Length: 268
Image (tube, rainbow, N blue to C red; front, top):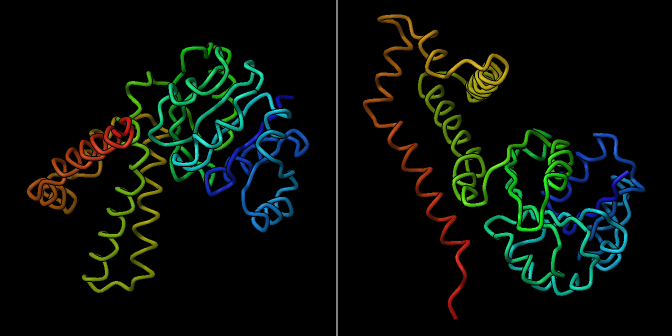
């Protein structure tokens, strides 16, 4: 069994640990690092996985998942400078290119960059992974297998990671905003907030499930519930009149541009 270390046990790190355990990984094959002793003890008790130092994690693991804050990466990589270069390093750090890791780790260390999203905490992440220079197809297969424990995975060239960040990384927030607006609209029409929330949430879940399970194009699904002259057609017309489609394009483009800015090397 592949031994895995999760470096950084915040929300994303803990979600990965929990997902790997649900997928059948033995606690003895997992370790994690956490700078705060109280948090480390809490996670050890909750998951039965041992907390270690970064150096101990590197000695233990075949795969290192880096889930610390981007600003903490340089210090962490300094501690990992002597790792075995056959160790697979998987970055979950938003905005950081594989070259950030390759420049500070031993030559030839395989690095895979992953952009997951927030639904990882319930095992429904959408993750996109990209290989660094030394990562082989086998490394990608292993990273994909491990990330599949917390959701679905696609592979993209690293040059597309900013677009991934804008679409699926930020995407849940767009959906939450839409659901929030639907709930408020329902309340405005006289529904209780509890009922409006249940109606909007289940409608979003049901629509997403139909998209996933049928593979039908969303245009066809939208047309299927839009009877000529009916209520849905009127509602969709109002959305188009108010530029919802254009607003979504603009949101994704703005998020992409910001991702590029955040990932650019800082100027001293």
